[in-house]
Length: 135
Image (cartoon, rainbow, N blue to C red; front, side, top):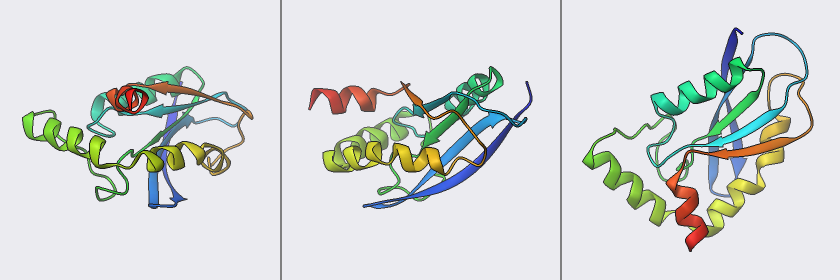
């Protein structure tokens, strides 16, 4: 299935959160998945995962998880320096900010640039979620 990628910006209490939206390139109602990335943000593998899922008929929304710490569009490299920066950001991000971002999921869904189904599933490729869960 042919897909389209868009970028949207969502207001949060800690600033704008940019999100990648990957979706089928046809009109219709589709189930949605909110895909949280790993500590390196929206890397090639995360973008390809979103595209793969969108190609199977889902609307995938992937937020930049460190939007309050890194400039929009930042992708940390898969190397030691990138891992150290991602892990530092994971710890530096306030727990309340994770909660606020998660609370924006309905705002995110209303901003998707096409009609969709009214529910969202969660997916995560992220050790950030495990860090948060263990806090």
